[in-house]
Amino acid sequence: MFWKRKRIGLALGGGGARGLAHIGVLKVLENERVPLDLIVGTSIGALVGGAYASGTNPYELQQKVESYLNSNEFRSSAIKAFEKAHTKGELGLAHKIQTYLKNYFYLIQAMFKPGILPIEDFEATINYFIPDIPIEETRIPFRAVATDLMSGEEIVFSRGSLRQAVMASCAVPGAIAPLRDGEKLLSDGGIICLVPSSVARREGAEIVISVALAPSMKPEVLQNVVDVYYRVSEIMGQRLKNYELKNADVVILPEVGDLHWSNFSEAMNLVEEGEKAAKEKIDEIRAYLPGIKNWFRRKTYQK
Image (cartoon, rainbow, N blue to C red):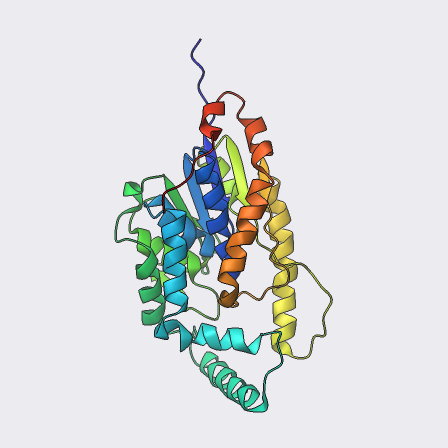
């Protein structure tokens, strides 16, 4: 009797720097030969998922991230300034003054522009990781999720430019100006769909593996408007995450602590946390796929 296996979809959630844990998850799934029939990504999940779906293996992707984070372009960027402002270590007086002035400058910019980061820098970053191909030509079928700020609707990209789809999905409100697409004004998919489990299900996945990256909700002192806004975003994100995970069969939760979205310096630790969390779920994934044990023979990937 011919046995047809169920279609497996991987839903990669948003979370800024925390999304680098997705690379570790992909390492484990690839080493364990878990067959993926669909990848859906929101925000940085779209960036990592789009790169992987188009043929960049997890080890190459990790190397590209390391090179990018060590580049002069990143070290002088607004994101790096945000990271310094939210560091948990003690800063010297000169460093504190410098960080304050940089962030004050960006805050003033935000009062007159729809986004703090230059769109050219953002586009260059996307182009560094994502090839210039149509979504229809990815090695693994791929979907990117964005939000239309005009209608409030969820937008799922299944065709057209892969780079443009990932850019729209990653356009973090406030940091990146929304992208105009006809009458649509596209922004971060995480606004409406933090973990795209439901999209993976609608797009035909019979088994959905979801990766969620929400930080732990720890009580903290709310000293200013930015602190309050960030806390509100955390609460909303937690609610959205819980709703979306009801559509998942297997949920992978890398331990990201209370890491700020801009803290890319923790990249390698985050990759390790993704690996650890995925390994803990391999037996659960196997239970959903009893008929394809050969897919799970251990594989050592050649770097």
